[in-house]
Amino acid sequence: MPIPPVSKFRVPLLKLLGDGKDHPLADAANALADVFDLNGEERASVIPSSGYPVVRHRTGWAGFHLRKSGLVYEGLHGVLRITPEGKALLSKNPTDLSERVLLEFPKYQAWRKAVSQTAGETTAATVSEDEETASPEEIIANAYAKLRANLAAELLERVKAKPSAFFEQLVVDLLLAMGYGGSRAEAGTVTRASGDGGIDGIVNEDRLGLDAVYVQAKRWKNTVGVEELRNFVGALSAHKAHKGVFITTSDFAKGARDFVEKVGQKIVLIDGARLAELMIDYGVGVQRKQAYELKRADEDYFADA
Image (cartoon, rainbow, N blue to C red; front, side):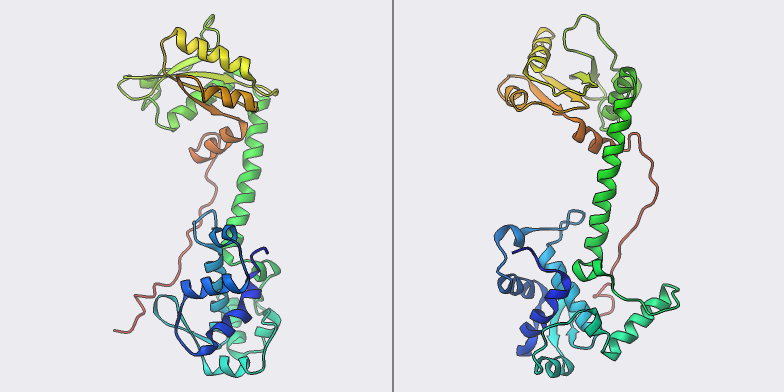
């Protein structure tokens, strides 16, 4: 089954804590994974931006809301324990602990009011439907992934609309940003080499120029096939070159990808999707608009002496 939303973690977590014992967050997360009968892939699922396990994260946020309701006490380092209020509620065999239900608890109401006042709002804040499904960090991570995907698509569209000379310059800028050559003067410029049959240019792999990487840049709409890769390999052999990068705005046929695995030279294939990702990662053709730093309370700092 898919990993349940955060709101569905609350009742099973409260029941798990009903034994009155201390439960470390990691142990509680594993126990809830068993309750939900999650498979190996679901248990191993992580938030892309942080690498933090999704099940453990949702367990933590379920515990957070239970704590704000006064139903759970959280000790140092994520150890959870039920409170007398939690035991009283558990005796009623609750089946739903959604936002609507939690707002019936005075402590939860007070926390929501404090949140709204801190945020400068005039009305009490309520959990959105998204927050009932995922934790705030997951919502941010998912939104970031969508923004990044949209940006990658826009970059590739813009690159395809530019002339070949622009694309070749882009290749230079990207390789320099990735650390090849050290500077434009040291790396040289990737320029079209007429009559080289598959080589658009050469760039130094390091500042001293001890090795070179041969580059082919294709601003294509059609899929790059085996023939184009065969020509590139032939050109590398003619130059006694051992390394090459083939960059295209389109994609590579499976046969082409299989072909480069069998040749003696080390060849890296960069398709349009990968090109856009690298442009974002290395700051080529993009501007930094806004940065957000996520912080959380330091449990050690607030620990009793």
